[in-house]
Length: 125
Image 1 (tube, rainbow, N blue to C red):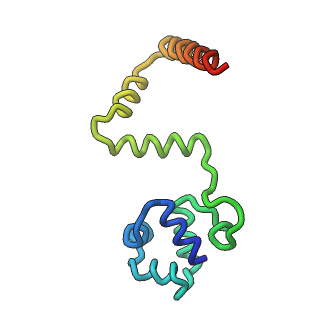
Image 2: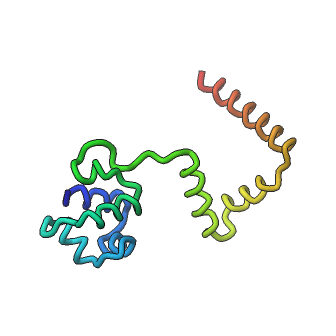
């Protein structure tokens, strides 16, 4: 498990201190888990899986995918949560504009999007 913990942390692009902070652990505890000196308690494993969306089966055994697949709603919720924290970014401004559309505006936007996709698909043929 120690190698998988290290692999996970690197995949998340976190150093040991940052990884530990997200879990309420000290850097030294993370280092001990990664070098195999200590094994994480079940509660720590549960926290890792919940905090980072990791498959417990993968973490414990190495079988399956590293991350639990997220639903479309989870992807959207995570995107919106990140967006709220941003300043005046383009992404935030476009979402604000979309939030003001009425039903007819959405229909028109869908028509335009479909036309763009048709052209793109036509260019690829």
